[in-house]
Image (tube, rainbow, N blue to C red; front, side):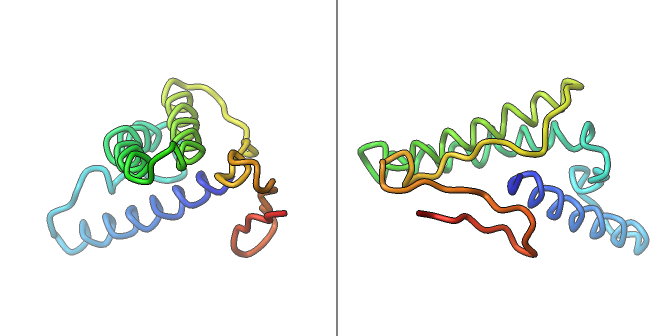
Length: 125
């Protein structure tokens, strides 16, 4: 799942920065001290970020684009939020999750998410 992989990479970068700042005696931000290997500890941070930053941003962009053009993205954001919430509550989430491509929602294309590549790719047909 691309979202999960990218979220963990960012959390790892934050954790490394937090660790280095701690070693240097610098002030730190608590959310950056969450070990990315502990999904249960990271999940509330992710849920809050999506709820208070990502979802409002995409909702505003969808409004600005008009005609609900970005509704598929909003659906994906909400789906990701619900998965992190499930993890925060102690639930287990499969790595492979459905992804709604915006063009697919408009009937223009279908997509397959490819996970085995160095970088994630979306194949559009």
